[in-house]
Image (cartoon, rainbow, N blue to C red):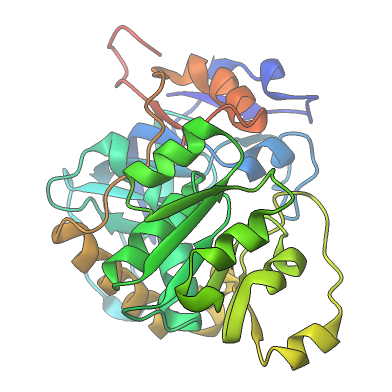
Length: 339
């Protein structure tokens, strides 16, 4: 196969190269998958530099999210279970080694490509879609009529959150830092858009709510909880999704008490360990939305990345905040014109 192997930590994505590598050898409980599309993530940029919390032993193949076709099924599953997928089935999922033409992955890391979806659209679903759904539905109990503020709404989790909130009947106020990204959020269903570079954005958000009462839910993958308290309603819920801005906030807790609000964290990656039953419920809910047309792929389409050789450029664009949604690289099969 061909893939991007990290033999030593690099300065940045421009140092990555595609090489010929041995095919992965699945363990008895793993599938072998031919990759048709690979999705990029910010943590890929950290991992290749040795700065991420989970660092595989060198050498390792970069990339995590993908979609493709089952080439080989497990030879032995626990409790004598039969494999859920068969050779030829289309799947998406996540496993170390996504920037390659083949990858091995266990069954719990795979889902079937939704009806009517392609490899490109489904490659970036595994991380962002359940994060946004679990935050809004499982943790914040979003309901019809809620006013939901989604920060960085043109990002991968942001666009997923906009769609989930709309599907449950909420009114969505989306923030972003450029007109183009605000337009993208609007195209994915946001009712109102606000530029968060303006110092007055909390007042603008409040003025969009009934009688200026504030929003019921704040979805924050950036690190904007403190200023968001200015525009949250009584009994509001603030969802801590991540810290894309790079700073860990310190909050004056008297403000939490005075407005009777809840600050709610979401660590989606730990649900498989702590609440595996919830993982299944979240995916069931997501598939209902996808198959009913209420949730669509969030792939960046302003430009196209085709072939593994485009991964460094895709990662550079992602890191430079030049993109929106999920940046996905199409991976033609071996023997085709692109690597």
